[in-house]
Amino acid sequence: MNPLNGIAVGLEKVRKAFGATVALDGVSFEIKPGKTHALLGENGAGKSTIVKLLSGLIRPDAGVVSIFCRQVRIDNPRRAQALGIQTAFQELSLVPELTVAQNMFLGVEPLKAGIFVDIYKLEQEALKALTGIGLEDINPRWRIDKLSLPLRQKVEIAKAVARKPQILLLDESTSTLSGKDVNWVADVINRLEADGVTILFISHRLQEAREFCESLTVLRNGANVGNFQFGEINDNEIVSLIIGRSLGHAYPPRSETRIPTEETPILCVRNLSTANGLKQVSFSLRRNEILGVAALQGMGQSELFLSLFGMRRATGGQIELDGRSTVLSSPVDAIRQGIAYVPEDRKNEGLFLNLPVSTNVSIPVINRFRRLGWMIDRKREDQAVTSVLRSVGFDPLASYRPCSSFSGGNQQKITIAKWLMAESRVLLMFDPTRGVDIGAKSDIYVLMQQVKSDGGSIIFYSSEIPELV
Image (tube, rainbow, N blue to C red):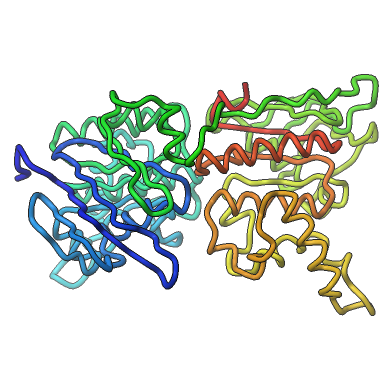
């Protein structure tokens, strides 16, 4: 059993470097048993490195890790699990081709005759675990690759909880969730705390951290810049610690760019319908305008954006560009007509993670740099990529590195740069700041204002109502 007093998780002067990059520089903090502790910081501050250390995926170079007042060496994931540590990862650890039940008990499946997996018992145990945390609407037989991103995230959490942890690491587990789903996470945390489970909670949403947690640690550039009780510090002070400067206000002032109401709308949608839930939606979008879309999860916003990018066939209604009716039968059609899409899942749908930044940015317009019919003029391509990367505040000298090596905020900047390179007139932005730290969010807001000031138009869906307001 967990001790009633003492420390459930303790880090003392922990250091970890990857080559010349110091990811953790003497980090120390403690979590009391049965409590939820927030770990806050920008992308690249060291939060995920701590999660990997406690999960047994990497080892510290120096320092002491203690679990329930006992110094431990967490050499591998099995050792972490033996210590009662389970992790719900931000980068989902689920196997897409397997079912919910198979993923939840992967590696610890119930067996028949000590050899064969007992599928019936496996599915019954998964159903019991799902029902126990309010997910009875998820069928254990569903394949992971058929589920939406929020449902996959719920299964990731359910997988960790089903293994009965004493210590649970939630690595940005609410980044894909909104509304009632975040309330569901709060309920899960409350149940686990009541059972004495200790939780390390990582999030970029201060409101959630304050609601779920009693205490917090702030990391910046791999160093611990403060351990606090939430009652000791306000949000402005937390933000200043996270980014190392005063943010002043979470959102930049709105630009006063005039919306030319007398002109024909750049995009007009009339009674647009699809087979999967969009019903007679109408609106118009003008030049220099940011149009917000508000909706609860699953209320048609995804269908709307996919329809406008040519990925969903309309079953009724009309789309007009510059006053002329058009049919968007594919993303190629949309791109040719100046419509771009920044998707919710940038890692799987927005970028080729293993390719260099420069290649990702130039892909939509690669034909622009052809010479002699088939060769690519690399000099012209590099010049264009350098210019657009500078415009989004991204260091062009890093353009040779693969996109996978950058934080979520920088990946989102690369995605936006790609469409600025294509000179898109209409930017469809679907929850673009999801899972992005506070400083990078501000950078994205500034980029949106710049797109508007330069004559572009944006349709913007956010799961965070304050962003829309």
